[in-house]
Image (cartoon, rainbow, N blue to C red; front, top):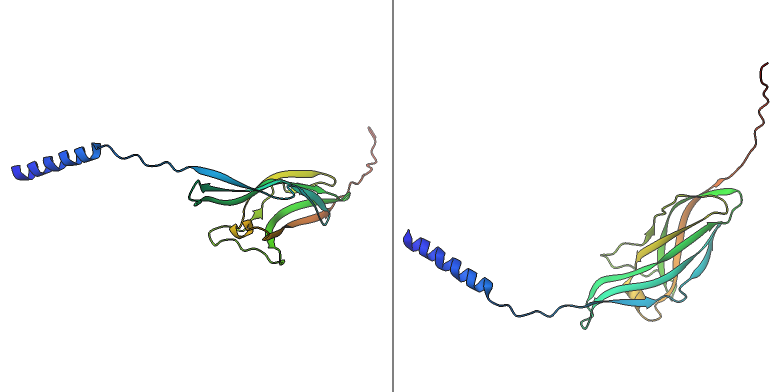
Length: 177
């Protein structure tokens, strides 16, 4: 039994000494943002009774400095502004989808580990003449970062227009009989 306890003590002392030994410093990894300009940075659009613009657009990915290893895949960020151009219809915003189109007119596929960019609106109804502004942060396909690969960004919006009416009702009344 004493031999067994002695073995434990020797093992504990060895582990303590090895654990306290000075370690060689490791080189710190520097992560940097690689920002790609979207030209033009603001684009106007019209989709049915909706008009608007996508602005302040840029693509950012994070990579290790020196090695180029991707730390965070590319994201398209910016602001989406939409306006209901109708004078007599309310628009209920359902959602949207973003497609990245190559120079041959085909959609650029997202990598399997990434999600297709979709839009969920923070405000669901848009009265006639009113507008909404919302920021976006979409996954961006690595293939689209190649020079002259991306031709356009297609924004598919889903909305339900409803007739907007303002009516007057006359109520014929009297007081006291």
